Image (tube, rainbow, N blue to C red):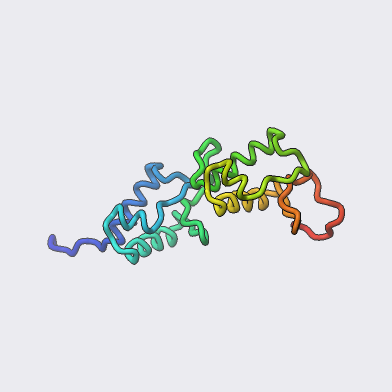
Length: 161
């Protein structure tokens, strides 16, 4: 039987993405292009893109991150370029904190000031700050702002973070 039906568009797209992941074009820890970008690049419908990405997720090649997109499974290399703008901003803020630009217990500038400094949107800055907060590098004090964390948790809290 040489007259078999061609494979579905989603399977072709999934195979192409698999090959790009294997070739390192989308490295471990890196982001897969958005559904919209894939639709435009491949000239296919959103449903086709979603089926292809769902297949890659089932295979464990990519993982979906709510509100952020899909990331190639695995740990990013130490010297890897940040996959997203907010990760880049988080890296720059982390470096500024480690360099002493923002000493321990110092209040960080507000989102509008940081957005201006990094030439990005406030939501990007907010996501970057969330990353640093999850790492324990900064803390949020309600009605006061964000501060560089001390090396040990404050003594007036009795809950673990």
